[in-house]
Length: 121
Image (cartoon, rainbow, N blue to C red; front, side):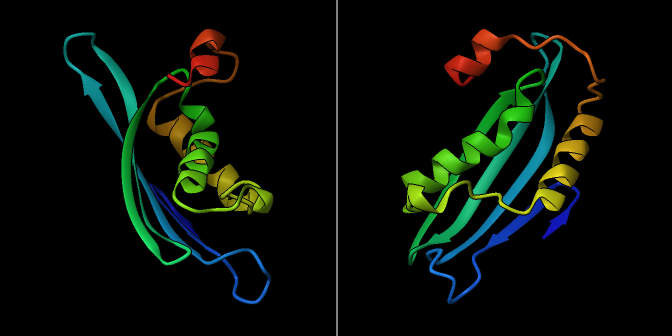
């Protein structure tokens, strides 16, 4: 379930997806030294009965790759890779993607540093 700044990800019992109840929150922060904006993420919840909390930052030009980072973190904390990405609902994913673009004032066609994406920065 999506609302601006927050995504609640929950597995559906009985579908063999593994148990997950995760909150992914995000907000724009600014680096005063560089004068740039970036996205700060907090992901916390429970996967397979194990509680966790992680925080990370993503540069403005790579914040669109948030779902990949969230999936890696979920797998690190117990989500079986065979269940695929943590964000399966495209409607919610698209809404979050658009919200992040709006919050960071990213326009279609802006350049992306692919080296940063590959390095996971």
